[in-house]
Amino acid sequence: MAARFGCSEFFVTYATPNRVVFEVRRPKLGDVHVSIMGTGYLGLANGVTVTVEKIDASGAVLRFSPTTSDTKHDKASGTEGLSMS
Image 1 (spheres, helix red, strand yellow):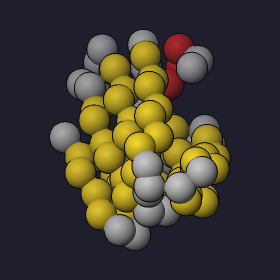
Image 2: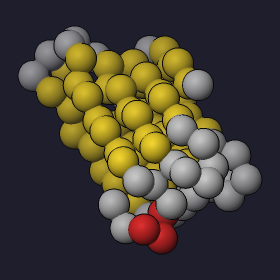
Image 3: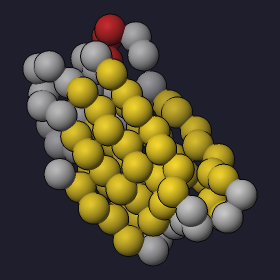
Image 4: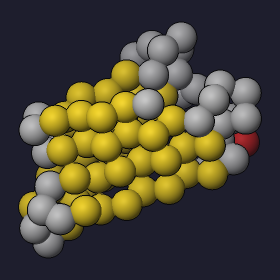
Protein backbone atom coordinates (compact mmCIF):
# COMPACT_ATOMS: atom_id res chain seq x y z
CA MET A 1 0.00 0.00 0.00
CA ALA A 2 1.28 3.47 -0.83
CA ALA A 3 3.01 5.35 1.98
CA ARG A 4 0.59 8.26 1.52
CA PHE A 5 -2.09 6.14 3.20
CA GLY A 6 -0.02 5.78 6.38
CA CYS A 7 -0.20 1.98 6.50
CA SER A 8 2.88 -0.11 7.11
CA GLU A 9 1.00 -3.43 6.68
CA PHE A 10 -2.48 -4.37 5.47
CA PHE A 11 -3.72 -7.95 5.87
CA VAL A 12 -6.99 -9.38 4.54
CA THR A 13 -8.26 -12.84 5.52
CA TYR A 14 -11.39 -14.58 4.25
CA ALA A 15 -13.17 -16.90 6.71
CA THR A 16 -15.98 -19.16 5.49
CA PRO A 17 -18.81 -18.77 5.03
CA ASN A 18 -19.26 -14.98 5.15
CA ARG A 19 -16.53 -13.10 7.00
CA VAL A 20 -13.60 -10.93 5.93
CA VAL A 21 -11.02 -9.88 8.53
CA PHE A 22 -8.83 -6.80 8.07
CA GLU A 23 -5.71 -6.07 10.13
CA VAL A 24 -4.16 -2.71 9.38
CA ARG A 25 -0.92 -1.46 10.92
CA ARG A 26 -0.76 2.34 11.02
CA PRO A 27 2.18 3.85 12.91
CA LYS A 28 0.62 7.32 13.30
CA LEU A 29 -3.11 6.57 13.66
CA GLY A 30 -2.98 3.26 15.53
CA ASP A 31 -3.71 -0.26 14.39
CA VAL A 32 -7.18 -1.38 13.31
CA HIS A 33 -8.71 -4.85 13.47
CA VAL A 34 -12.09 -5.24 11.72
CA SER A 35 -14.23 -8.29 11.02
CA ILE A 36 -17.08 -7.77 8.53
CA MET A 37 -19.76 -10.39 8.17
CA GLY A 38 -21.72 -10.26 4.92
CA THR A 39 -21.29 -7.32 2.57
CA GLY A 40 -20.21 -3.94 3.90
CA TYR A 41 -17.26 -1.60 4.04
CA LEU A 42 -14.25 -0.41 6.00
CA GLY A 43 -13.51 3.31 5.66
CA LEU A 44 -10.19 4.28 7.20
CA ALA A 45 -9.55 7.84 8.34
CA ASN A 46 -6.23 7.83 6.47
CA GLY A 47 -7.98 7.75 3.09
CA VAL A 48 -8.72 4.14 2.12
CA THR A 49 -12.10 2.46 1.74
CA VAL A 50 -12.49 -1.28 1.20
CA THR A 51 -15.92 -2.50 0.12
CA VAL A 52 -16.98 -6.14 0.42
CA GLU A 53 -19.14 -6.22 -2.71
CA LYS A 54 -19.98 -9.93 -2.70
CA ILE A 55 -19.33 -12.81 -0.36
CA ASP A 56 -20.30 -16.47 -0.27
CA ALA A 57 -18.83 -19.86 0.63
CA SER A 58 -16.39 -19.70 -2.30
CA GLY A 59 -14.81 -16.33 -1.41
CA ALA A 60 -15.25 -12.58 -1.42
CA VAL A 61 -15.04 -9.77 -3.96
CA LEU A 62 -13.37 -6.64 -2.56
CA ARG A 63 -13.02 -3.15 -4.03
CA PHE A 64 -10.27 -0.82 -2.76
CA SER A 65 -10.73 2.95 -3.23
CA PRO A 66 -8.35 5.81 -2.33
CA THR A 67 -11.16 7.76 -0.63
CA THR A 68 -12.88 8.01 2.74
CA SER A 69 -16.10 9.56 3.99
CA ASP A 70 -14.56 10.74 7.30
CA THR A 71 -10.93 11.85 7.65
CA LYS A 72 -11.13 11.93 11.46
CA HIS A 73 -12.69 8.53 12.26
CA ASP A 74 -12.54 4.96 11.02
CA LYS A 75 -15.97 3.62 10.03
CA ALA A 76 -17.29 0.21 9.05
CA SER A 77 -20.50 -1.69 8.47
CA GLY A 78 -21.52 -5.27 7.81
CA THR A 79 -24.92 -6.56 6.71
CA GLU A 80 -24.60 -9.64 8.93
CA GLY A 81 -22.39 -8.25 11.72
CA LEU A 82 -19.30 -6.26 12.55
CA SER A 83 -16.44 -6.26 15.02
CA MET A 84 -14.04 -3.31 15.14
CA SER A 85 -11.17 -2.51 17.51
